[in-house]
Length: 439
Image (cartoon, rainbow, N blue to C red):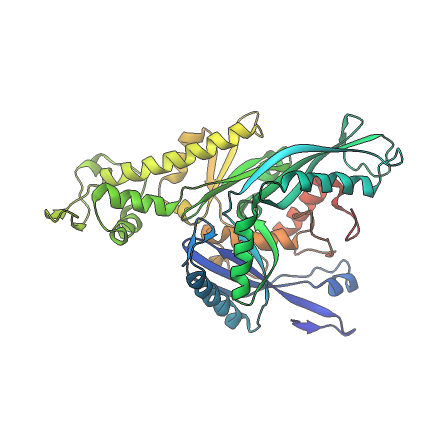
């Protein structure tokens, strides 16, 4: 689908559909993006990205990032995509999808190969990367991203671009993000039922991080924690590169179920109480201040009343478990040898009052809530933490170098955050400035 043409007949814009299929909501964002022909024809000209349509609906048939009911999930996806298409005024048949499920995890390792001619060539780099892909894709796992962290030739590191350098053994330090192949296949099949094909699958924590990190975070390193409904994901940036990611099966819906179980009330009442009164900010009067009656107990013995302190303790327990699990996973990975310096909270459950202060006490470092940097032309009101992964998908695909496996056809970027992000990848992922399709 084409939006227009310049005076030479070349396309000036193409639609890009981004899809985040969560356990609480399904969101689709359609934006315009510079086409390859337009970028090639107008090198150096700044090409903007505009929001064309946004659709959201309550999620159905999805649990923990995996498909639980195909029919229900299909209807939710069709509704969200249909709303976005109606607002955009164009149909879409291809989407970029965020993945949170499938035991999403990253691993750091080194791949090596003997150079074919005593000088590092593109084919030598390709050989190492292909071996790294084969190493990751075992036991039913599929590779999503393969990031290069550094190069070594004959054991000597600190090399920015190994091409053309003499040496007999090339080693590449790699970070691979992978997930269960079955979950990805089910997701593709689900979208196929909705007459959509998948152009790229992006790890949700990585997408969220691209949307909320500041220049300082990119430079000094940070952990981005995306608190969703059923899953909490995290991404780690350190020493100037993306180094680790993973997921934990805790989320906002678990807090709701904890409240329902603690006070023997229906889940829908527990969700309402959490939305109205849930927070982590304590006060002396909380022990004696009762919330509105919650209704009959399951045993039918009469109406229950809950104090603010009781509710806060239930929420704080689950939040503490979640933050501790993320902290343990990050520190166990070894990617933060000097400890955590910055933590950024995002996602729908990150807006809980008092969460930032609780996280600062837990991690012992600077913590803030991260709102995504809106794509050019996007209303600022749309850039909420709940849409971080969705907006980050746009950065992942549109910013050269953000996804190393993508061919980099764009020569210019929107000004502002996207441009700075692109420059950061150019400086950090050294060898990725190369012709499209090169190894």
